Image 1 (cartoon, rainbow, N blue to C red):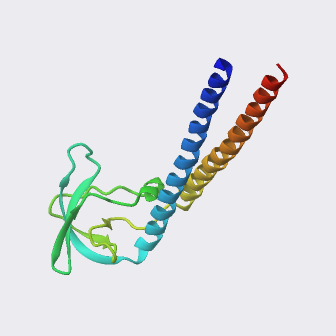
Image 2 (image 1 turned 90 degrees about the vertical axis):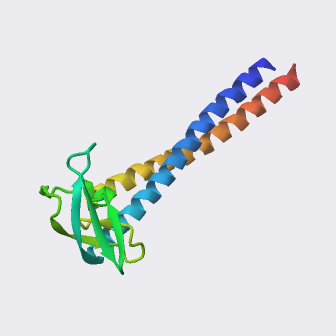
Length: 162
């Protein structure tokens, strides 16, 4: 009985690992697809004037800015979407009070960027990594369950012959 309990414990640990791997791949993949779609859409977003408020204390390369859409004022510090951070672009040194162009998501006015677009190569890379995680996670789940069932059958057969 002790051997059966140890075997089930081992299978459970391996199963949990593969489930976590598959879930991480699914969550990461959905994030990267949504982020890249937003990056592509940002090219045609509403362009409005904004004003640089300040640099962020904890990150001097980032800035805080404000802008208005439909009479409502918003504030943000997002310069670009996640995957666009992998693009090579010249960084500008924005000064507080400077007027800059802000691109605003027409569906969600509180989401805006200073630089539009995204990095296709980064999207492909992250999508492949997410797909590999899903592939090995799901494959590992199937393998673990089949090996666990085979072990149960072996143990039951050994117990029947004794």
